[in-house]
Structure formats: C-alpha cells, structure tokens
Image (cartoon, rainbow, N blue to C red; front, side):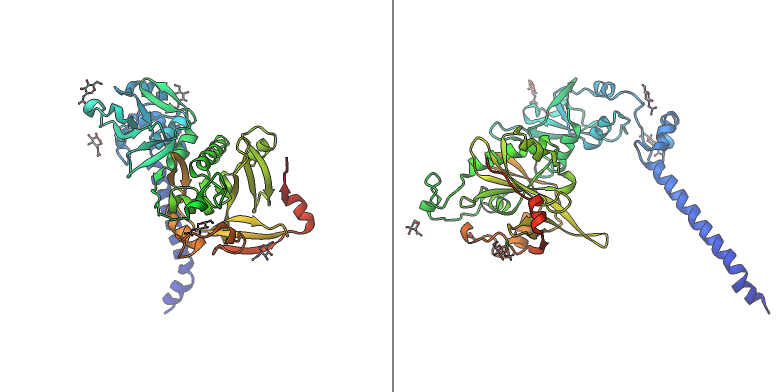
Length: 408
Ligand SMILES: *[C@@H]1O[C@H](CO)[C@@H](O)[C@H](O)[C@H]1NC(C)=O
Ligand SMILES: *[C@@H]1O[C@H](CO)[C@@H](O)[C@H](O)[C@H]1NC(C)=O
Ligand SMILES: *[C@@H]1O[C@H](CO)[C@@H](O)[C@H](O)[C@H]1NC(C)=O
Ligand SMILES: *[C@@H]1O[C@H](CO)[C@@H](O)[C@H](O)[C@H]1NC(C)=O
Ligand SMILES: *[C@@H]1O[C@H](CO)[C@@H](O)[C@H](O)[C@H]1NC(C)=O
C-alpha cells in the first residue's frame, strides 16, 4: 500500500543522488581519457614521460613519440638533403617551448625552394613538402599550399644542418596564420586622364606604387612592434577594386585588432625613433584609439592606424568596430563584420593583410554599388559610410585629453 509512497518520497532522493554521482564519475573519466589522448605537453605526460615512451604503443592513439632528446639533436637526426624551411606550426610551437617530443608518424611540414624542386631527394614519409618561391621584385615569399599562401620576407632564420628555422618563431607563426592569398578584382575605372595626373595634383593625390611602398614601410615598423595590421576603409576598397591606392583619396587606412595593438609604438614615434611623424592621436586606448602618421621622408600621404575593437553584448561578440572622433567631440563607430582574419593580399609587390571575403565588408561599408567610383571630395567621413554609428560625445575636458594634434 505505501510502497508507492516510499518510492516517491524516501527513495527518490537516494536515486537522484545515485544518478548525480554517476554523471560526475562519467565526467571525471571523460576528462582523464581526453587528457591522456593529447599527444603533447600536458602535465600528465610530463610527469610520466618515461613510462609513456616505454609503453607508447599502448597509448589510445597508438602514437610513437620521439624520446626526450633536444630539438637540435632531433633536427640533426632528420637533416634533409637540400636546404628546407621549417614551416610546421605545431613543430615550431614545440620548438619555441624547447619540447620536441613528436609523433614520428606525423609528417613535418617543410618549405622547399622551387629551385631545389628535385623529385625524390626528400623523404616524403617524414616530410610534408610545400614548394615556395622568393620573387626578387616582391617583399614576400609564395608557397604552393591551399592555392597560394604568402608571407613577408621580413624574418630571420638560423641554420641547423639543412634546416632553416625562423629565429622569431612567434612572428613566423603569426605570418603563416595570415597567409591565405586573395586576388584583387582589378576593375578598369576609366577615370578622366587629366584628373589622374599625379604630379600636377589635378584631382589625384596619390601614386599607387609610391603609396604602397610607404604603407609597406609603416607595416614593417608595426610588425617589429608585434602588430599585424589589416587594410581598412578606402585603402581596402582601392586594393580590392583596382589593385592599387585610389588616386583621388588623401590618406591610407590600416587597422589592428585590440588584442594585438601595442601602444608603445606611438611613444616611439613621438620620440622620433621611427621613419614616421605623429600627426594625431585620438580616443581612449580602452575603446576608441586611432593615430595618424606621415612619412618623414616624403611628408605625405597621411596614414591612419585604427584599433579594431570587439563589441560584446551579453557576453557575445556582436560585431567589431573602428572608432572615429569629430572635432566637436562626437564619437563614432564604424562597424565591421566578423570576418576571418587569415588572408593576405598583394599591392604593387608588397604584402598586406586583409580579412577574408573583403567584398562582404565593402558591401557593408559602401553599399551594393561599392564598385562605382565616388569622388573623395563628396565622401563625408562621418556620414557617407553605411556602417557609421554615433555613440556619444566627449566633453570639452575629455577632448583636451583625447583629441591630440601634433604640429611640427
Ligand atoms: C600501432 O602502430 C604500430 C606501428 O605503426 C603497429 O605495428 C601496431 O599494430 C599499431 N597498434 C595498434 C593497436 O593499432
Ligand atoms: C628531458 O631531458 C632533459 C635533459 O636532457 C631534462 O632536463 C628534462 O627534465 C627532460 N624532460 C622531461 C619532460 O623529462
Ligand atoms: C637534381 O639536381 C641535380 C643537381 O642539383 C642534378 O644533377 C639532377 O639532374 C637533378 N635531378 C632531376 C630529376 O632534376
Ligand atoms: C576631364 O577633366 C578636364 C579637367 O578637369 C575637363 O576639362 C574635361 O572636360 C574632362 N573630360 C571628360 C571626358 O570628362
Ligand atoms: C559630421 O561632421 C560635421 C562637421 O563637424 C557635422 O556638422 C555633422 O553634424 C556630422 N554628421 C554626423 C552624422 O554626425
């Protein structure tokens, strides 16, 4: 008679406890199994390294991890017949941490110069070969991988046997992470020839090759400060649409993700330690910083460097934005789509990073007729873009701190 009552009152909590215990036990087991299955550098393996090597065939993945020898010794052991560039990001990550235990069944990715493209010399069981070229008239290397990948030549290497190893491994990893090549469109703009005459300034303010060269020098200074800038705004539009800088624009635009921005660069520029001069510094580092520089040598054109911020709502990344600030204190946000940051482009022989699917951002910013020429003088920076938001205003006091112009 009361058995139902007993079941529903007394036994239910016990049963629930049993269930919860079971779930926790399963979770703990899952975590242990997961940790055990990771091939490298978890504490678990660190402590029991000797055993793992001895019993490596009993590992869940059936790995065969190299013994604990130094990275240099391992590379000497694997020394290939021709010079190769070590480009395997996992292996480089290990090398950075001086922990070169490696599953011997996993091939190590290497770059082989096309001039050494000589069939069977390289052990393709051990190495995953990617051919690359180093064109004289370009400031980047080209890899025949996933279509094409390009990375700046701006990295040094050291030699171990025939291995060339990037000295600054983190920089090389950052380069390779942003290397998927995207072609520009190259539309014919049919501008009035006399308007595009550059030296007489008849409506043309910039010369593509010259401006791209200046922008690449700025890019190099940023790279040396650990920043990896992306083409932005009108400069992105010009590259994609015309494969050059739009001649009637007055300046060029780059953007750097907040997490990658190094405010020390501005201090260096102010101390006169770079090839650029600071013209303006606007906004707050936390949410609205931008700087404008000009090259010392040529004096023009100006280059804007914007910090690209995340806009987060309820813990979710909604969009990214770059800031804008009017001289009356009005603050703006130019919204950006959440595009993949792993692509690279060429402009006049120079490499520049771009967010993949540039056309998506260009439509977002300039509308469906983005491919039409739009006279710079009629383009109003704080209202013409389709992606502008007004987001408040600095007081007069704040403007003294956050609207800084430098004249020298
Ligand atoms: C593990 O790999 C070795 C060598 O590749 C092979 O001989 C062996 O059968 C594999 N063991 C299992 C359990 O897959
Ligand atoms: C690997 O070997 C070096 C010396 O050769 C030793 O100092 C280090 O602790 C070893 N690492 C591990 C994880 O056993
Ligand atoms: C490979 O290169 C060597 C010299 O570098 C050359 O003698 C040989 O003919 C080449 N082999 C092929 C298959 O191209
Ligand atoms: C080109 O520009 C010049 C000078 O601005 C002007 O006189 C001429 O009419 C223009 N030609 C065309 C075809 O628009
Ligand atoms: C843009 O800037 C101008 C000049 O400061 C100002 O008069 C105008 O109100 C601004 N427009 C917007 C949409 O904020």
